[in-house]
Structure formats: C-alpha cells, structure tokens
Image (cartoon, rainbow, N blue to C red; front, side, top):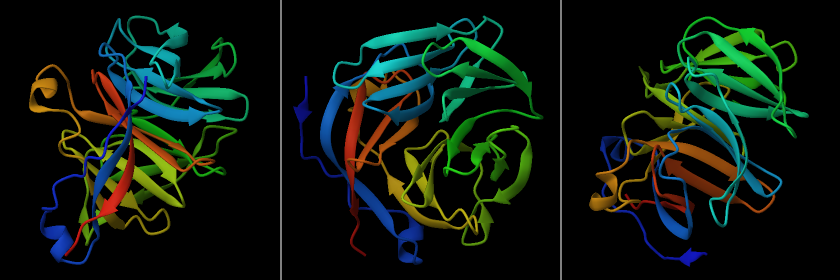
Length: 252
C-alpha cells in the first residue's frame, strides 16, 4: 500500500554548502514496506523489482523484492561463513561481493543459481555499473573499476571533497552520469564525478525515519534508481521502510 507524503528535509547544511558544493535535501514521494530483518548491503532496480543483498554471517542473502509490498518473491541464502555485500546485474547475471572473505559470486539472474565464484583482493563493500564498467568500493576513498566480463580490475580513482579524500564509501548507484555513494555511519550521500572523483553534491537524508524508528535500525544504506521513470529509492539496514524521494536543492 502506497503512503504518499510531502516531507522536505531540514534546510540547514554543513560547511560544504557555503563553500560552493551544492547541498540537497529531499521530498518523500512514496513510502513502501521494507523487511526490518534485512541488513541491506546492496540494492538495484530492474524491470519493476528491487534486487537486494543482505549481510551478516548466517543471515546473508540475495533477494528479488516486490516494491509495492516489500514481499520477497525469490531468495538465495549464502553459506553461513559469508557476509553478503554489494550486488549488480550484468547482462543475464547477478554478481555479488562478500565482506572480508575476498570471494564473490556470479548467479544466473533469473534462477539465482550459482554459476561461479571469483576472487579479488581486500574487502568488498558495494557495486554499481555505468553500462561499460563495474564500479566497486571497499570502504576507503577509492573506487575500483572492473572489466565486467573478466571481473579484473582496470583502474582506481580516489574520491575527494575539495581536495580531501572521502572515507567510508558504501552502497553505490549510477544515476544520470554520476556515482551516488552512501557514506557509512552517516545520513549523507555523495554525488561523485566519475571522471575526476570530485564530490559535486551532497545529499542530506536526515529524518527519513522518526527517532523512535531509528532506535531499532542500523545505518542508512541502499540506493536504487529506476531510470525509465526517474524514480530514486533509498533505505537502510534493518529499516522498516523503503522511500521513493525527489531531491530538493537547499537554498544558500
């Protein structure tokens, strides 16, 4: 059931706004149910459904979710030793990172059957794609660019905010030529120029959940974009709600 709302975030913003980097709040367009037991690590939209990766040992999964109801219509559970992280679709496959085991999984997108495993160095946090490359992060200020067919790293780029590296890059999404990145343990999302790594905008998502709701949740983490209908979705770990939002530029 859809819950329409018109809630705009607080107009106050940090110093970056005054220093020239645009700051955005939000307007809630719709609120949807979200599984409060889902420790969301990866999220993307495809053909009317959300695909979600959940984390934690013994709790990790890949899911296909009906947006309107939050119903999980398809699910694959990872072996208990793995902590699921970011996911992305590439052609007819779904690819998933894991946290500290340096192992990823390639699934058949339709059946969730495991097709193969692959290795990569370091931690795995998040995935997105620009349609030509896979873009991955590991919780540092660096983005890694992979060949989507071989899953081999091709290059890296450091994300900076006015010259200062931005740590804790988490869940990623490619939106209109920019990379959106949750910043772990904050309610902020960076808009990143994929050519330079420069932050070109900050999104403040403070207040999506009430203080009472936040008592039973973890951090904001999860961005998905429906390009055909220009719909932006956000949620978090153990959040009971998924939000469709519109960005609202804050006044200087």
